[in-house]
Image (cartoon, rainbow, N blue to C red; front, side, top):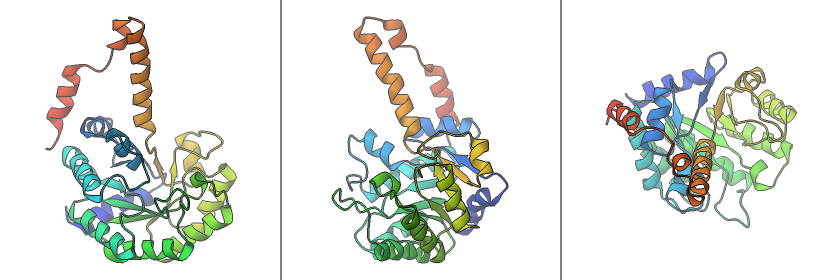
Length: 274
């Protein structure tokens, strides 16, 4: 599907009544399970991908090409629109971000997220002008071929300033970001303030505000257009693995080995478009 057509298809999910839920896969089988469940689009999770590789998220430990290959796999298997959770755009300069966007378009991605993070734990959030310039560069490179999400990580990096978060998101919208995203606003009032401030640009929320997990219907009522899960499905699966290992240590083979059947996995893999 040509980039502009894929852009229109993916963007339409963001502008329809109610929006949509976009779960994040971490490997081929998880992507196929989400597609089989009927989700209309999926996303990568930079955190889940890093964890599967035994690395930390947000520290530039996963390369652009590794993430692109991962995203291509998910799209190839499912034929669904794939949104790439591409951290800060993989590179020091706005030009590097543009190159990442071009590579994402060439890889057939439907969307790409660009954060204002730096990968530096001592100064995790980029200066305002730098962050805006990087989103502008992503939009300029996208040319209507891929949905660009402008994201600020203020809230999850110990910077709970709602005013600065709104300022950043508004600036991202002004330079052309298609979707806006600030993970874990403190509460529903803060989320509503963000939605109102940047309207009509669609807003993505990561699961819910920080203080309470809401239902999909409640988030839609608040004006959210896209709901993503980040690494939550992956950590849910890892919790099940941890419980199984505890059972195994205790000598309980039945509990430790109860799970999805090999036949079901084979069935899902056979449906893949690989």
